[in-house]
Image (tube, rainbow, N blue to C red; front, side, top):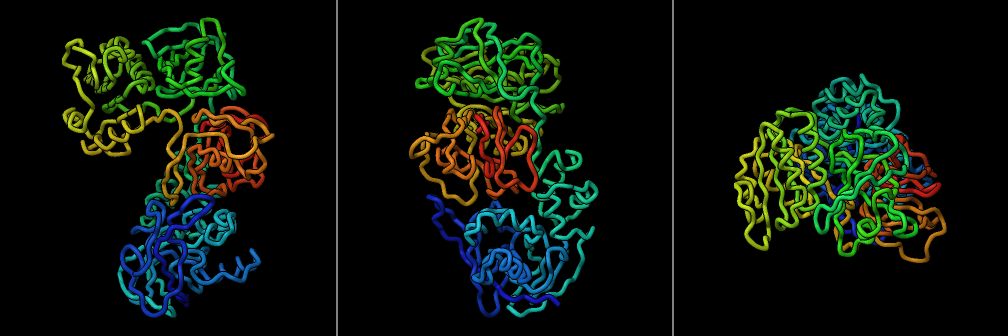
Amino acid sequence: MATLLSVNVGMPTDVEWRGRTVHTGVWKRPVSGPRLVRRLNVDGDGQGDLAGHGGEQRAVLVYQVESYRFWEDFLERDDLDHGAFGENFTIDGLGDDEVCVGDRYRIGEAEFEVTQPRVTCFRVGMRLDEPRLPSLLVAHHRPGFYMRVLTEGRVTAGDSILRTRRGPHALSVAEVDALLYLPGHDAARLADAVDVPALSPGWRESFRIMLEAGDGRGAPAGVPVPTLPPWTGFRTLTVEDVVVESPVVTSYILVADEVLPTYHAGQFVAVRVPDAGTPAPVRSYSLSGAPDEGRYRISVKREPHGSVSSRLQAGVKRGDHLEVAAPRGDFVLDDGPGPVLLVSAGIGVTPVLAMLHRLASERSTRDVWWVHTTRDESTHVFAGEAARLLAELPSTRTLICYTSPAGPHEPGPDIRTGRLTPEVIEGLHLPPDAQAYVCGPESFMDAVTSALVAAGLDTGRIHTERFGSRSSLNPGVLPGDVPAPHAPPGPPGTGPDVTFARSGLAVRWSSAYSSVLELAEACDVPTRWSCRTGVCHTCVTAVLSGAASYATPPLEPPGGDQVLICLARPDAELVLDL
């Protein structure tokens, strides 16, 4: 019979790591005597990052002493005390290839249910000073597992562990872990996993996404692989026309010798601008025209200190050429029949204007709300174009907010003075099944998102598009004052140019960094990651141009035009959507 060898607890603490501070509860220590296990955790225990650890589904983490012995041999270490892997229960028996998700166990006075394998998180590697560990745990089928508490009660080291129920479909912890993170996803077992009620909602959703993608290869680790773009790298397009939309916004109509491919309304293109620096800088601009007209329109706002936007507006004319990457992005209009809300501020109107073009071209019968906020009439770009498109649709509502009009504006029931406040949004009486698309400054999108949720929309129906860098996702890392992206400290590298397109930064690669992720962090480019070892695919990034390779191959590679920056190094000039 399996036995509870040790109960380990620890409260979250701040730990210095690579120049940053991580708030983590991964440091656990054995305790003696009975310890009460409650619905959310063991008494005296806590988790630092409740988005990935803890909570009802992950109340107790379990690891086996047999795995300790394996790692002592594999890592050639003799300093692995109970709790070293961040677990609450160190047990003898119940290997990951034996325990199934949905199994129930009685330990002492408490009863538990197995809910998922351990999360692939960098902090266990940080705890043991072994950065490879998140990947190794998966590769060697020894992740450990989480349990939720069905019946609260006291447990004590030495208690026997009795299985009281077997989970459906006999999906072992090791098999579930491999289904998500390793190649060779079995569609039948993916369907079984979705059908296990005890499996944590996040894991079930990942498996559902993988099932929808076919055999799982279309969504490694539950991260969908986007459709390959219509061309790779940059291609030369001709500026057919230059249209001054306002004193600060200019549109550029781009064409090729043949009809350009249709794009999804809301997508963007990366543009490499010649004669604006060395290497030529890259900027991303939303496509603002009709997606299916065979030509592309970008609309660029001249920023006060924007060298590229200034170069475009001062020096690019009809007949000139620009290097353009294929349309990309997942901020795209859905195909459903339900109501749609298009909300924008300032130049954030461009991607939602493309969505309005698509709705009009399809003569859509959807209820459409068009909401735009800008300073005044002089900055209200595309006002006439949007009005014409809205007039072609049978069911529309319009609201324009002028935040600081210089004087009286053109009267109309759809125009008001003031900001787009939660009260104004509440007054729109939006249906709860509306799909909302919001674009503008980050603070604007955050405020609108909160107001839409308060008005009754589910967060899954609210889609946002951030110009420039995406928000970072660095689990457990405490926020601090982060400067704008910049060249890394120290002498320039001697390797290929690496361009972070969204951040507007190009730097030379240096072998001082083990990965593109480390280079990006040295430049304060916002990044998204979790395991840092090529398992979770959180860091997956589109390659706009160039090539990269892996010193250590990931357990499962990403899509064809993507790269896992936590492991990648450039082979040649590299342009990333980052």
